[in-house]
Image (cartoon, rainbow, N blue to C red; front, side):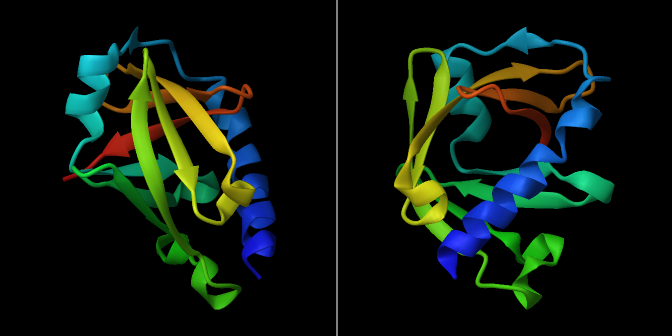
Length: 132
């Protein structure tokens, strides 16, 4: 069931790519700015059709995610947790089960409208909104 979610989540994330073409590049964040931006905050990843996928970057280095906000709960158990850290100018994370526990790192840039543009180390890109 968890691997099914990872595949579904990846497919959902890939659908975000066409929307990124309109995004202009913002100012890339350095390690200090990344920490200030995500530590203790919920980051809402934009998904197709106007939904958002919340990730909570806890102050102690844990990250929690839930697909229930985008309606995935009726199809599978869309929750996982993992660890996050900063490596150079990238935000890195490793989920317990999603993506088979593979580490992914992201560069982040602030957009003029206050959102974030993110680019994952495998080229996947998107936007996000910063919450509380």
